[in-house]
Image (cartoon, rainbow, N blue to C red):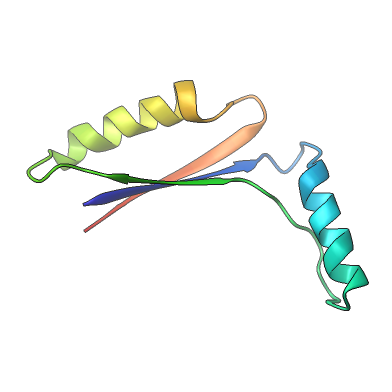
Length: 81
């Protein structure tokens, strides 16, 4: 099993990296882009036999306390086979 965590800036937070990427894309001729948000992607391999509910709970806590800054970032956790 794998856990996938995507961390992005909250919509209300200024994202200078996203603005830079958006501007570069527009200058390269890619039009119609309303916004870009640059974030982080983590992929965590879970050991065979790991309890899914316990892993989800632990990873949610880790994402909230350590992997993201909950004041300015949102995260999405997905566990897949």
